[in-house]
Amino acid sequence: MKKITFAERLKEARKSAKLSQEALAKKIGRTKSTISRWESGERNPKMFEMVELENALGINAEALIYGTEEIKASTLSEINKIIVQLTDSQQEQVLNFIKNPLDDNILNTIDMMSKADDKFRDKVASYAKFEYFEYEKKLEQKNKSKQNSAS
Image (cartoon, rainbow, N blue to C red; front, side, top):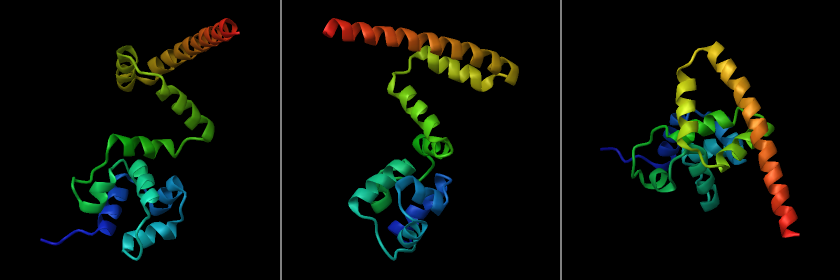
C-alpha cells in the first residue's frame, strides 16, 4: 500500500473543499505558488500556516499531516466555500448572525425555507427583514438602558 504524503493529502483536502489553489491562497493570505509548492512537496507550511489551512479546509492538521481521517468535504469547508463569495459587508453580517445562538425556531425556519418555492421565500424574507429591524431596535434600546444604568 502506497504511503500518502502530506502534499497529496493537502491537495486532496483542497479539492474536496472545492477550492482552487488560488482560492485557497486567498483565504489564507498566501500566493498560489506557495500552495503549489506545498502540494508538490517542494516546501511545507509553518505551524501557523497549518492552523490557517485547518480553518480554510475544515480538517484538522493531524489529518493533513498523518492521514488520521478520511478527507471529505466538511460542513465547515462548505461554509467557507460560500463565505469567500460574499462581500466584506455580507461576511460581517454572517459573522454577527452566527455570534448569536441559534434556537430551534430559527433552525426549523431555515429547513422550511430550503424546501419552499421562490414566491413563499420572498414573502418570508420580507417579513424577516421587518422582524430583524424590530429586533435591532429592541437590542439598541436594551444596550442604551444598560449604558444608562451603568452611568
